[in-house]
Length: 191
Image (cartoon, rainbow, N blue to C red):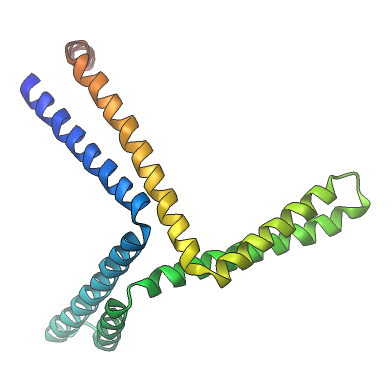
């Protein structure tokens, strides 16, 4: 049992190191990461379309009213088009986030105006709403740069998570006997 546990821990450490490397690549070369994500999503859309077409063909044999042929064909066409321009996906994603930020900031500005007559820090709400609105407009009009920022941030978070995970796993590996005793004790308590 100890050997299996140690091998499992070593495999988990290896995966965490790999995740750390992926995070580092995302930080160092975010535009490559954006293209890679776009290609993966494009391939997924193509495969999804193929699955819909196959399901449509198979369902007609059993008289199941499933109409996936047109959606499948459109998915394949969309996937192929996006495969040629993988940055489009990240741009659409960034613009969507920008629009969401703008709409949210408009609500904050409206709320600050509503609270203007009350004893509420409405000026602070108004300033934060305007800053938020500016950030949303920047993201909408410069989506590629916003995508790169999001990729870099995600890379930092993946690296941080991986490093914490590696430290945790080394601690667990070091104290394997204590953990084994604790697990054995818990098992005995149950049975």
